[in-house]
Amino acid sequence: MDSTLPARLDSIIRVGIAEGAAPGVSIAVGRYGRLVHLKGYGQLDYSASSPAVDAGTIYDLAPLTKVVATTTSAMVPEESGKPAPG
Image (cartoon, rainbow, N blue to C red; front, side):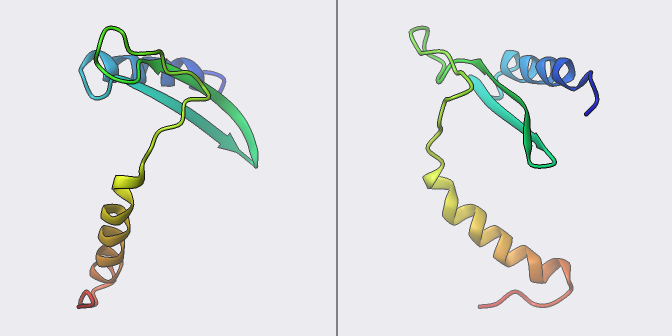
């Protein structure tokens, strides 16, 4: 792993939070089956009293499951030049 990766990730994530892309981020980077970087940044939401995000923060992504699965299912045939099912 490039030794500058943690500093570059810190910089990218801090800019994203500062620009309002998200109030906080929890990031994990794995390489060859090992966890090489784990860190939390920012807060859970934009309120001043929101708790900080840490390496153990878990996000509920359930509302995204159908969107991600459907989009992927539609795009795989599209990218291979075949018509989408349905």
